[in-house]
Image (cartoon, rainbow, N blue to C red; front, side, top):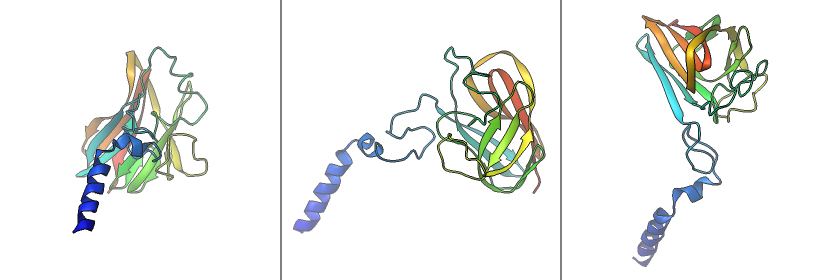
Length: 189
């Protein structure tokens, strides 16, 4: 009985310790919390679409312009970019997809882009679970070109969204500042 009372007291005291104390030494496990347990400056966001009766999900963190030069600045031209902030941007698909010219089997992947003043490349990496940098060279499933348009007015928040969805087809858009880059996505069953 005495042992049970001690265990109960120990459990109660552990519950009273703020979770931030535990989070200081733990790796980042959530798109909305940093390694030290504090909220991230670039909040967590999710884009979802239904294709072939299944939900395709992109989890990312949305950075803000905050007066900075974005394209060719925060988003460097000619270098692989994590396509978001903080943890790596993640694609989860329960079905096979064609993303642009790239065959993507059902699974979980990390998304990157290769920005340029001209044509961007959409990169699907097989390495998952990492922070958004450094770029994991040698782990690409593949790359495909993206289409690019200019937005009529600047967007403060970077967004990832599925648009123009019809049947088993959609477009995956990445928008920030005055840039809209996108790639077609098709469920191949």
